[in-house]
Amino acid sequence: MRRVPQTILKNRTFHGGILADGSGFLKRGENGKGISSRWYPTTIAKRFDNLKFVADRIMFRREDGLKVIREYSQRNDVVFFIDPPYTAGGKKAGRRLYRHYILDHERLFTLCESVKGDFLMTYDNADEVKTMAREHGFQMRLIPMKNTHHTTMEELVIGKDLSWMDRYPKVHEPLAEYKVDSKEKEVPTNRYSRHKKPRR
Image (cartoon, rainbow, N blue to C red):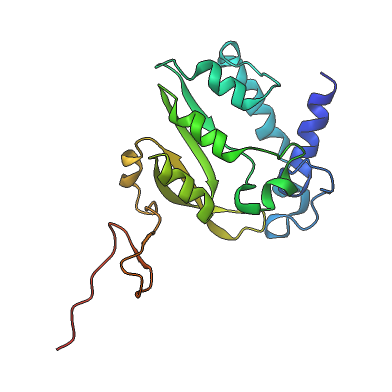
C-alpha cells in the first residue's frame, strides 16, 4: 500500500503522467502552469472520496490481460474496454509510455472476435491497425484527442457496432482505400466522400 500514494504523486507530477523508465518531472506544464497544471490536491482528494460509492464493484488484477479476456469472453453480460500499448506496425509510443509494452496484436483482435458480449478498443490511427480491424469485421471511428504536447490528433476506436458514436459531429469513419484497377491509383473513399461533378 505504500506504493499507492507514491504512484499517484508520480502520475500527477511527471510529464504526461508517464511512469515508464526515462520519464521525468513536469517542467512548463499546460499554459506554463508547471506542476499545478496536473497537481490539484482538492480535486484529487474529492475523486478519491467519491470512490467509496463504487469501491465494492472494483477489483484490480495484476495479470495477463489476454488471459482475462479469454476468461470472460463467453459471457453476454460482460463489456470490455481495451486500451493496449500502441506498438502495432512498429510504433514507438507504447514502448515509450509503458514498461510492459510487448503484445501480440493479431492475437488480441482474434480474442475480441470471440467475445460474446461487447468491447470498445482504442488504438492509434495506424494503417496496420485498420487493416486488422477490417479483416476481423470490426467497425472503426476516429475521434479527436490531445496528446501530451497538447496537439490535437485523431485516435482510433474499434468495436462491433459503433453506430451510436455517429451522433457526435467530430466523430467520423476512417478512409478506406480500394484498388479499382491495376493501372489506376488507390482511391480513398468512405460514406462521407463527395463525388465531384464532371467538367463541361
